[in-house]
Length: 434
Image (cartoon, rainbow, N blue to C red; front, side, top):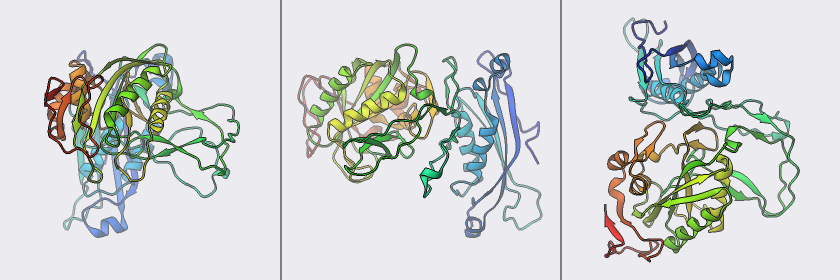
């Protein structure tokens, strides 16, 4: 059984014209979803039908896959959701599939039907189907699927990947469209033989947020002296490519260890001194309660608006280097930190990769980012899933009550430190109640 014409909805573009469709029917995988123990233990067959609504004319005119949806990769993604992390409801499975499809900036709407033909029902039946329609005005109630790297015992025997398993990365509508999600081979990197060399390691962090598969965030951690470095072939995608001109970026800064205000002021200076970054404005400083993780001191948070000519991943490495220069360490998951810098926005890029997601996937629900951002740029808009006017998002963010105050002149005026400080709101013109 597949999604029929009655269950499908037409989707329109911004001019009111009907969008084109790509349909995938009968994607099948073994899954372990359900509320009963035997469903989680034994598994059963799940089937999904997907109808993607988009404009295919540009791809057809250029005969170029880069300008449309790779339905082969989409089918793999859908099957991965069906067979992936178990949940109680197929409604949740449908939302995950819809979120995964809409993570591509060229897709305007999606219809998803999830079938559970072997549901534990005690009367004769043909099928159980949950069908949903999601678009940019009615967003999915789930996060997109992102493939996780698989650790194998003998990495030297594995071939270098020629394609990524993650959902195709695309830019937002109206932005330049580039080949997305594809790896391109470049000459093998030379061996690095030096103490203090760096390797990529994923480590999420709380009271701000980090970018990486769990955060998402890729952080840089030192390779211990004497340990062998793996020499391999470098692979890149468009997030490694420099933009044609300056790109607007939004960076979120946070700290709650040591002299937090001084650290954040120094971090702003470090950003301004970094080649390829031009700081154009800095928000008020927010004192906020920690979100997630262990019990810990309040944070100081600020938002920096800047222009950059750095590629997204190069910018990520630059911010990580500044974190490390200020003693960033990770002794506890989601624990306190001396400095956290996250890329909230990079132009109009919408990207979901293993090490970087743009815009930041939780920015839309974090008042400690939204309130300072709205203060420095009242007309700001966050693109992507869950996005919208930043001021409106700040007013409804789940953690909005955790923002204690905003200090306006924090770059030049000392305010009470966060670390070890349990005092009340500072008085004077530099503070503003929120």
